[in-house]
Length: 96
Image 1 (cartoon, rainbow, N blue to C red):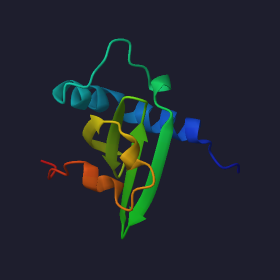
Image 2: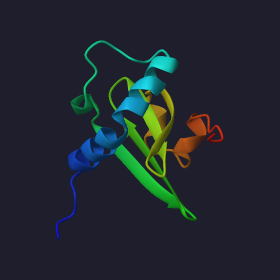
Image 3: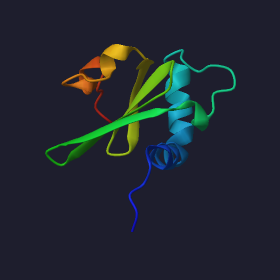
Image 4: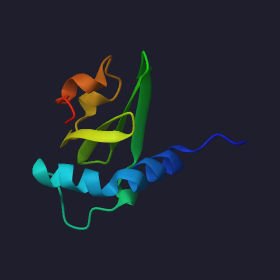
């Protein structure tokens, strides 16, 4: 079994939840013209206890996933990269 590439991981995660990501980006005023899954170029993922956090980003937006569900989106900025706690840039709302 081979290790998935970053590109494959982004595509898989975004394909599963693209509709929810699109709604989230629209709600935050971040949905641009012609936004495609291929626009997302970076991924960082980590575990805290039993919760998986994943940030998928393009040059303009970043989306936070909690256990494969998109929970927030922000304008991307370089401070996210290398941050000790990338999720602190996002708003974690309780799921209903």
